[in-house]
Amino acid sequence: MTRSNRIRRATLKARALTVIRRVHRAALTATKVLRYRALSGQIIVAVENGHLVRTGDILERLGAADLKDGYQSEYGRHVKKAHIAATGNEPVRVWVQHRTSGKWIHVHAYSPFDMALYFGLATYKQTKHLAQPAHFQAAYTAAA
Image (tube, rainbow, N blue to C red):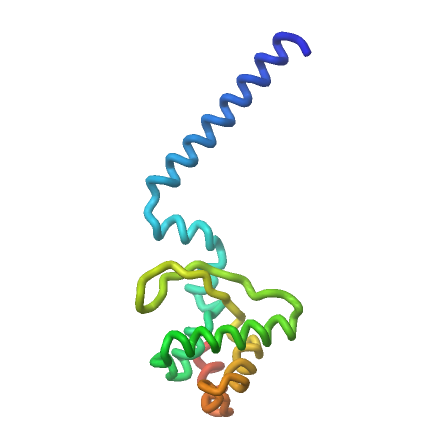
């Protein structure tokens, strides 16, 4: 390797390290909200626009937003299990703030018309009463 190639390589490496340092410095000064939104990317935009929903959104549409957090989490597990059984893939995940504690949590997001949402209602004993045709109609109307 010639001397000019070594110098060129060292210069490129130094520039790359400078860029990395700048990115890290910028990331450290960004607000927590901005960092989590950046991690979620386009998924959070789809959730905010209603193209994707969280399990809590469906419970809210059905009038069951007052369920305890533990029950809502268990409902989410039932929905995830049904989604994986139907598609063979895990649902997409998004970072959101918890509705009561304000902590940032990783939750799954689904299509509003994903039948796993409604299968989860029917299979979980705390939400089984919501798995009636009238409730389905209300959720589909709110999604459309």
